[in-house]
Image (cartoon, rainbow, N blue to C red; front, side, top):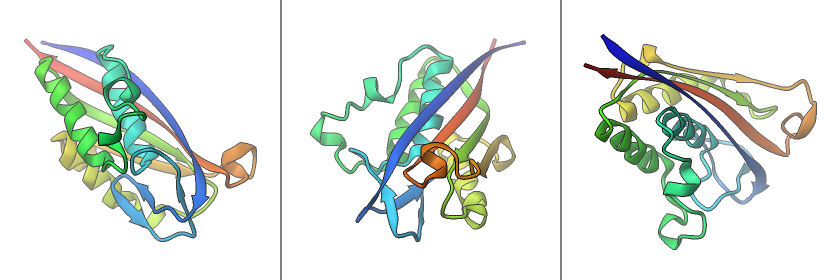
Length: 161
């Protein structure tokens, strides 16, 4: 018998010049990158928020405030590992994750598998338990206009008795 908890995460970052574009721990060649206090990995931020949300532990802003200098330029994979440790301390483990990246450009298909592998390794699950998808918004809204990238993520956590 197991107890299941579901969490939803959402994050968005603005695209700007002179920043690296990092999604799911993968550096993607592009003329723009995401603006943020950390490395601005919007995918990992949404996944972390989904994990935290499943256990009502707040969000990444609570755990890693953007006004704290120790997180300036932080590697979001390190932040996600910390979140995974928090949920494990609560007696839960990741069951599966599903994330959708809303991004007009660049095309992400060639990087999806590496993103999934990175997230799976960080969360201690098999790759088949992590889904990452990317879609455009048909040039509508801020993501469609290429002004930013947004991500929705859903996490299922399991606690075994």
